[in-house]
Image (cartoon, rainbow, N blue to C red; front, side, top):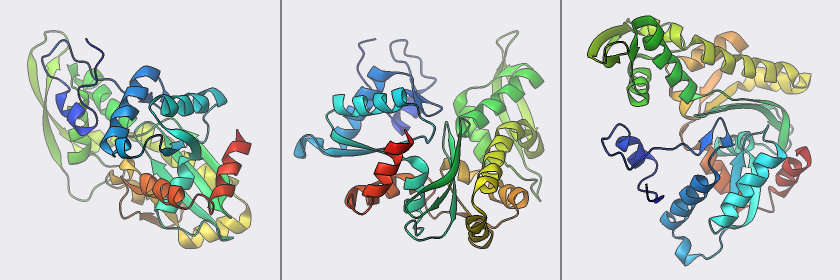
Length: 301
């Protein structure tokens, strides 16, 4: 109620569902778009304090953005960073940072296909010679998979479950590909008609069918990106495969489904949750080396 940021990240996630009426959980970014400018600015201020901005006044900042961000959306990110205390804001496409974070040779004439499944967006791109040759951004990700699980209980059982319960189910029994060993999970929700608590047991197959639509959109984006790439780069991808990153890469069987549908090998990066930020850090450390990539992003605007 005071407008003060009480918590962020994991700490804020743990507070969801609490009883305090004076605290509300907000996602200032949804589907790759800034929906709450003031909250985003305050969130960035907290981030900068945590990394020691006091010791580095007006730090240089590199921000990753969706490849289909509009001019207005890009300007909003730049302004939010500046208001939070940054300077010299450089914008780079998230898929490019993910490719660098995965340790792939982006400056060589070799095609690398990266699929980055985030919370609100999925970025797919064939990267070669320091830039994105073909790519797509679909506004679907891990949050949409959670929402699909919530919808399963709402329409199938008349039960309401929260975001945290849906995410726990996704981690426990969620899969994008049929599993060899059947798994079940129990969840307690609230009956929509009576408000009474009710316990429901669900199987991995039920969850897989419930999330098929958002997962299918992710797979389609990867397949279309590969189809739109030049033939010589497509040949490279057929040999090297798809590199899968982002939190969505941890969904059980998503690599097997992509391999089956795209007919290429799929490799999950070593640190999928950190691949993009590691790549962004490498770009910030070697600004001159990657300068052409930054300029290419600005021209694409």
